[in-house]
Length: 278
Image (cartoon, rainbow, N blue to C red; front, top):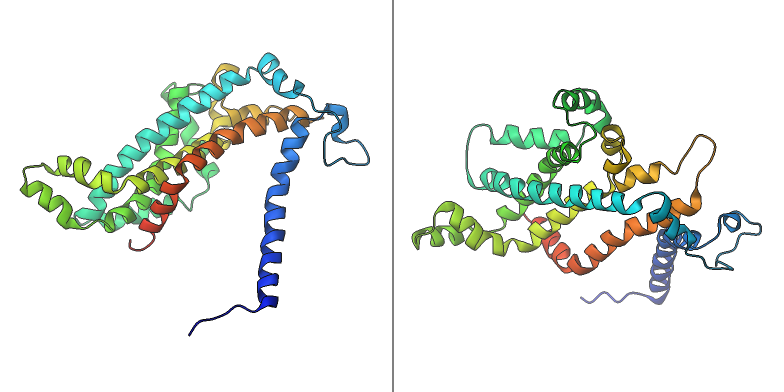
């Protein structure tokens, strides 16, 4: 039986989606137009929803006064490195958890799940003491190691669901043809799982790119700060530099938007592939 949607129901659904879209996009729109306003025009009354005078001074000052290019480079190095290494390690660990039966497998999965439920600030004290002893405080390599450790549990659980959807017969056939288990994994299974791997990498990258709490705690020198830490620096005890913060926020959002635009097909395929069986 074909269910034909009535006209009032269709109008209600479209109106609801339009309102939801407006509420979702308006904050982003406001940040963008604020970044093109002069500081005096941001809080002028009545409020203007379109800049009377466009200016690029806020963007120029980021690179002239705040060394924003250094922050972008630091974030790119840390986020890309941590995402790549975490995805590779998670790929191997997820393969083991999905393909092999051993006594502590369930315990390991539960431990990974529990780590996602614990707030980060609970482990901040011991983590900071450990990084001090290792002399990795205020070091990009130390922050990269922390991000790898944070990304691995969730990424492992995510990729395990993808492995569960890949038939064992594929790698068995490759091993019969002479491949080792590692060779079958990277030559046969990984190409099939490309959408899932890309989706896992993007989730890791976005989490590392936007992470603030650990970065603020472990990074103090300007030459080592990442973008979220730099954005936090625009907030002082008595003032907030809204113009510079808005410009920095726009530049921060752009890389992730571009990444999602080019990889959206892989994300959708990856999520739908991993959501069926786990």
